[in-house]
Length: 119
Image (cartoon, rainbow, N blue to C red; front, side, top):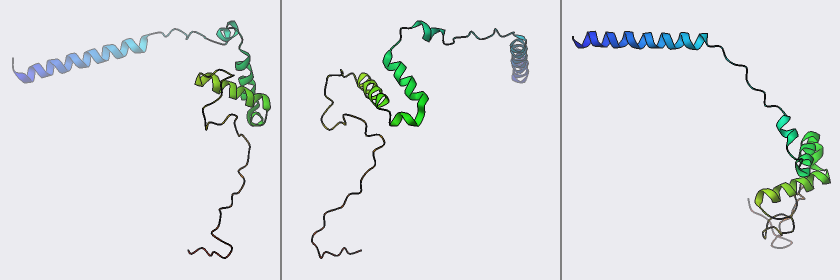
């Protein structure tokens, strides 16, 4: 048997296997997906922080100025960072979010009253 004949036989076997796999896949009946709905959330104990965070999520942009949402986000941040509520944050870290605050324009100190800036 020469090399050409062996290559042709291998190609025919490969194509036959591919066609068989395709036919099997197309004739397979898929089972309907299992429904994993909110039943799991209803059976778990209620966390008041989670409930408050969901409420803040539902109210959208109004949550940025809601004090309860600001407190809930601060508590969530403390939980995420692994700090207890009575611990103080690291030096230089903001203690509360500065949400909605506008930045006031700052004035840079000048060298004197008659200083002209060269451009």
